[in-house]
Image (cartoon, helix red, strand yellow):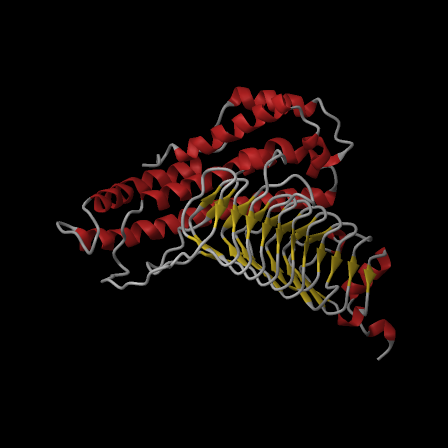
Length: 412
């Protein structure tokens, strides 16, 4: 076999346009891939497989540097390093990176300089700028913010798990670490999750929280500057338990609505603010469209999981009708029945009634201030240079978007 026939026509196109392809005979491009969406300044290492018509790879990106890599319908902005593993339906903004043996599934967004070490599993997860995860982390169905730069960043320790599946067979368990309205301003205290620990979702963790290594956190931490430590299961006991029977669900449902509110707020942030930065060039525009797709995917996933919860609660209410099971009081059944009755209308509101919601005056004030700034320094530096008054207006706007969702199911 001659050297000229050792690799496909699509790989040859990459080479002809100047893309660096190491050992091109080991690189596979599916027919669906548009070579024009791969930058001449990207670098592809041996053993890479690229698939999907939506795949877009910007300048300075490096694929497969540590091991074989599969990339399917992902969008990479600039200077992204995906070092090995499987990546599908995800978006990676400028300077983000993931180590080898990764398993990253649809609905995932890594914003600027977010990074993961090796053997990390992500799905339906948003890591905002500078967030870092260690190795051997399973962090699905989470949104994490916090920190100001690469030195002062939120961190997930190695061997950390977000537990997102319950014995009731539901996944209405997305967890919010920090939030969007304050997190996007890049001026909040970092969150630290110690290694060999976990979160039992859905939980809400405030900026500035430290959870000690080895701790499984099962509760919300809603005050800044808290240290969570100690033995979570200091005593062991057994009691009758029926996995079809739910207890108090008010907090669980409310946390889902807070999470959804933050995702809606992030979508409004991308539409109103991020668009002017990302849409300046083709690779950023592809990432912008990818982010919007993934945010819609996350919203739809949360709606689907809450629909499953409402179906499961029907069985729970039947079991609890006219009685109390175990230590459960009568009140849980009332809350469960109220959610079952309310969910169809709530679901429709989440699907059609939130777009553009929020404090229009605060939004216009913030957007006007943004439009008056230069884009020469890029997104991160532009946000850092905003005055406290402008940031406050932006946070007020985004918090009002969150409230438009949370008010649908007020916390009890």
